[in-house]
Length: 81
Image (cartoon, rainbow, N blue to C red; front, side):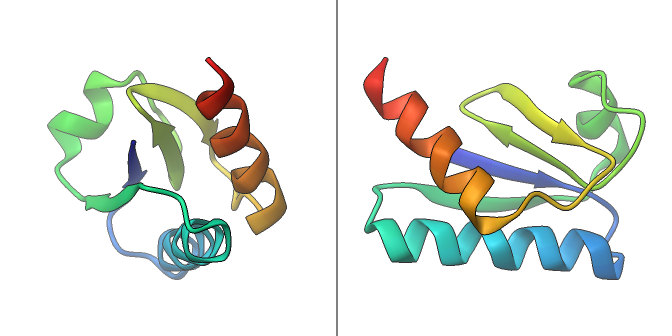
């Protein structure tokens, strides 16, 4: 599983990345958390507001900091598919 944090490095982006890493660690999920700062790549997802979280190519949130609980739910939902 690949989790991408889209953003330019602002405090909100860093907080979202921290929440994603905590969620993966707490669950013991087999997931890689990657920070994406390239604007072309960010725009390729159709994201207009950062921070954003992309899970296996699917944008889960944009323009807000997802909580660790929300991220855990998205990981669980993705594992069920």
